[in-house]
Image 1 (cartoon, rainbow, N blue to C red):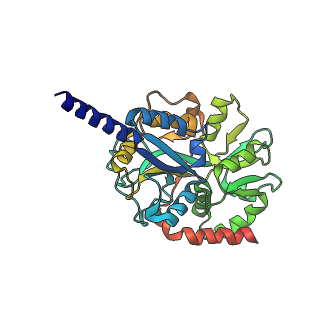
Image 2 (cartoon, rainbow, N blue to C red):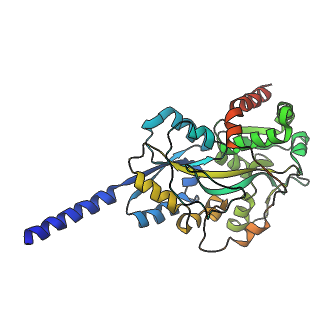
Image 3 (tube, rainbow, N blue to C red):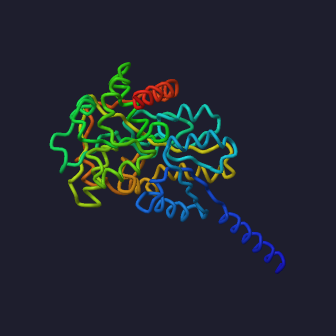
Length: 331
């Protein structure tokens, strides 16, 4: 009997060790896992629940994540990708690298209807031009005013080839200007201080005073109001409407830990994950919170119109529209 008890105890100990040794690898964008981003707190919360190790792998930005996946293919060292958006989901799906999530998304709250068996949304916000109130007395009230405005007041943008905000702004321009988007880019070019690979670099230049404006989100002023107690930065409200971003995560077919990956995707829809989105990722949560949003979120710019291309439309035209942007920017 003593031998049997010892054998069972040893088996349970080994099983516990094996479970503790499980590691979930997640590709995400770099700003998500900085000390001020939601990544560290989410890691702590999920590890307490799963008895595993969550390993974030930081990659520059959302488009760069997809580009890396295409290069690595089935050999990618990740269980989950977190940080793509609806502008990339169709293209990501066609790689054949992703598996069904099996997560109940029926209770998620989004500005659009959601029915996707591969990608799980975790937050959203509209893109916006953020300006410095101390430097811009009359902010643009439309994309047209931004494009045709004073070239001495500069804006920092992100590269649509590597950045989801950069791609979002390109689609915003295209949705407003259509076939004349190339001409609009040419008019805007004198106002562009620089184009950065990702959001973090662009916003950093802006807050350091290098430019009067930056492409970011309608939610960005909430950070300054809550974390810095400052009204210095505001979002410009555009008459034509604002382009929407919905960020998503998905698991890879080649994941060595599919059960753990699905556990994380389900966890992502609840308070353990979502509580860290509003005041760490500074976006609107897509899932349930344990407490109401801070009052500052109710004071943000509310777009009069939501602009959004279908994932299929973006996948079909992204290369041509990026080429159009490159040609206009190189003149």
